[in-house]
Length: 541
Image (cartoon, rainbow, N blue to C red; front, side, top):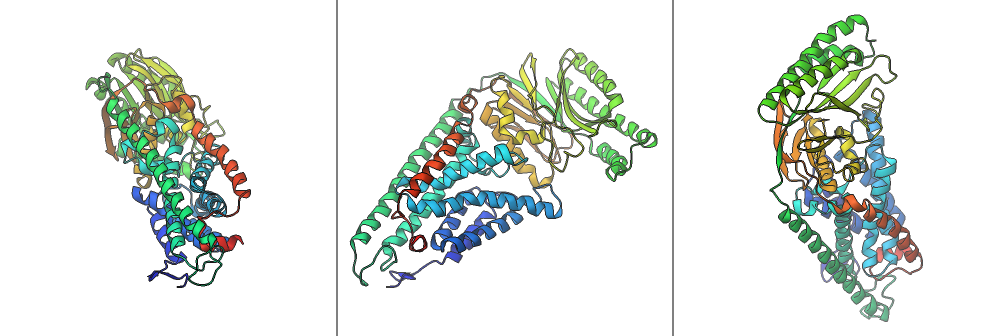
C-alpha cells in the first residue's frame, strides 16, 4: 500500500486543502461573512501546510492568503489604488504569522499543547497588532464574525474579543490535528515513523498511532468542556438580566439627504483645493443654516414625542467657526425649553487652523448649558486625518436625571481600549454618532455592538449612510434602521452593567502573549511529536 492511497481511499492532495481553505476564507471575514466558514476556513490552511514541504508550503500559503485578502476586503478599506493593496497585503502577512507558527512549532509539541499554538499565536498577534501597530483599531478581529450568537457574544464581557478569536482558532487547530491523526493511523511505510519492511509495524509506529489518536480525543474533550462553559455562561447571563431597569426614550437623527447633498455640492470646490474665500463662504452659509435649522426642528419634534436624550449622527450639522456660538445658543434654548439632553454631532470649519475641519460632539444639558466638547480621537488615517485634528481621547460624560451619558465618534468605537474608560466612569449610555458607506454598514454596526457588551453600557449609534442601532448592555438590539433618512428611536436602560472585562481588562490577551514564548521554548526542547504528518516529519529531518 502506498502513501498516496490508504485502505483504497485516494489521498486528498495539499492543493485541494488549500483550495478549500481559500474558498472558505473568502466568506470567513471581510465583505462577505458566513459565520460557520470562520470556524472551518483555517482547517484547510493548516492541513495544506502540514502536508506540504515546510518552506515551499509556507511561501505558497502566504501568497494565497494575501491574494484572498485583496478580494475579501475590497470596498471595506477606505484607501485608493495601490494603497489599498498595500494595506490589505500587510494585514494578510500579519495574520498569516499564526499559521506559520503552527506549521513550525506544533509538530514539536505533544498532546493538547500542540493544538494551542495557533490560538495563542493568533490572539498574541491580534492583540499586539491591533493595540499598538495598526491605526485602524480592531478591524479584522474574528469576534465580529460571530455576533449572530448572543450567548457566544457574552464571552467578550470576560475576555474581550480575544476569547472568541481563541475559541475559533483552537477548534480549527484541533480539527486539523484530527485530520493528521487519522491519516497517520492509516499510513504504512511513511518516512520518519515506520522504518521496517512493507507490511511490518515497528515499535515507533505502535507508539505513534495511538498517541496521536489519544491527543485528538483529549483535545476535543477539552474544547467541548470550554465551549460548553462559554455557552452556559452566555445563556445564564442573558437569562438572568433584569428587564425591570427603567428605560429611557432616546432618538438619533441623521441630516436631511436633500439639504446635505446641496451643501456637499457647494463644498466640492474646496475638496478640489480651491481656497475658501469670502464669496464661497457667502454661498455656503445659507445652506449650512438650512441644514442646522432642519436638525434643530426635528430634534424639537422628537423631544415633544417623548425623547429625553437626542443625538445627531456624525457631522450631521456643519458650521463655520465664527458661527458656532450662535448654533449652541439656539440648541441651548431648545434643550431648556423642552427639558431634554442634546448631543450635537457636527463639523466646524476653522479656516485659520492647519487642519481646518473639527469633528466633534457637544453635550447640552436640560438646562440649556453646553457641558463639554468631545473631538474625534481617531480620525480615519488618510480619509480624514489630513484635515481633521485628533482629540485627546478622554471620554467625557454628562450626569442626567436618567443616568450618566458619554459619547465617542464613529471610528473611535473600533478601539476597545478607548471605550474602557466607560467602565470605571460608570457610564450607562454611550452615544456613538457615525457615518458609514454601504459596504461596511453591517460589519461596522456589529463591531460597535461588541463594545457595549465588553464594557456594560447601552449604545445609541445614529448613523448616516449605514446601519443605525440601539442596543442594551448585553448587545440585545432595541432598534436598528438601515440607511435611515430621518431618525432612530428606542427605549434603552441608562444603568451600567458590571463586566469582568471592565475589571481585569486584557488579562486574557496578556496571558496568551506570555504563553507564546513558553510554547516556543518547549517546542525547541522537544523532537517532532507523534501528531506531525508524514510530509511535516520529512521536512523536519
